[in-house]
Image (cartoon, rainbow, N blue to C red; front, top):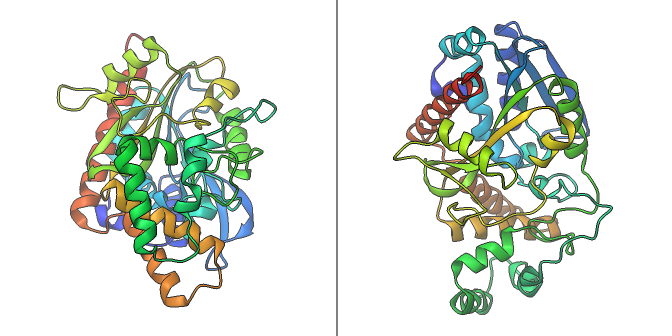
Length: 366
């Protein structure tokens, strides 16, 4: 066992180092899918994968971090702590559940402090059949020029224009318009891409390699940036399937902590397109799948959105003054990672509970 604070890292290369060291201490082999680009500090980038358990197990739990790069500070800490947690590892082994850890689904974003991939793509809007017509997000199109103004910080006039849009349409409509996913503006927010990204294709390879033998498969995908600070919302991450939702709610729900859904409006998240869990159905078709996104709150929504706008503005203006670039990067980190012991403690305790619950759920009725 290690201290909770020791499991978390302030930079990607430290997080990866801790993950690899934790796997080595646990006696686990790691397969590293190396990214073609280097990180912010010139370091190697990789989607690192470790399986704890029988590779032929019929029941598997997938625990992933860094789908949205900068959010990896949180998920990596959960994974590193879990790999040092003897009670947790014994729980999974005793019940015949193999645990597949995928560290940094989007290592480029993690290293560079961005939410998106090197293609400027939101990975969790990129799992789409690109041979089909791409959806058109008309509401986002109306906001795009306002979201990414010529100057940063935004002028009073720009702030007033966005406030007027929100006043006319409402804050939920603003969130939905911006975050749903859009496929028309390559330099914009929540861009889903025009083709599968490196992370998309690599993750599918991981699923084909490790998940096709599973008959029951659970997934906890760790995110940050929505909801009250430190509170982990449990968001249903499957098709709109009543039986799958009933399983998820039975496993992870309780009178005070219900599983929420983007399908019925109960989630803090808007309805989204191109979500990563669709790959499970395509790459592991024999598995009964039950999944959730564990979404931890950090800052109020409009502050998080402002940080995202600044990050995209900076990406479009790489010649920005260094002091401005530094402040924008700091705002991004604060929007997706609360650097306090209290927050980290809440993260680990809730994730640990959810992992124990997933093992019990996978074995229920077996």
